[in-house]
Length: 107
Image 1 (cartoon, helix red, strand yellow):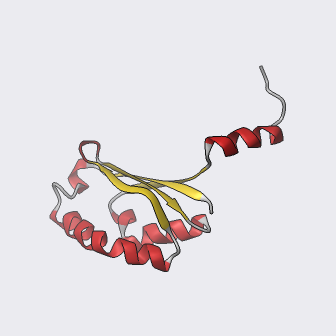
Image 2: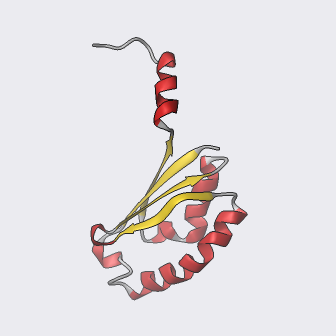
């Protein structure tokens, strides 16, 4: 199953440590994330992890499609107070194996 890395970033004034509205959203979402992930067929491989003083979060998930991950971000409300980046990831072994499909090295 494809893996995706989710990266979240928010400004200090939107941080749940400083903002009562985002704090309430985070507390609510924290208890609802497992059910939402199950509904959208998303499995957490790592995280969600909070990088507190950096105002960032990260998670690695498995999902059938990137659209499922995007829907998870929307339905969870994370997009309302975070800038969100989602990237498809591959293992080092998969990256090495894909080199035979790349044109010859430039240098």
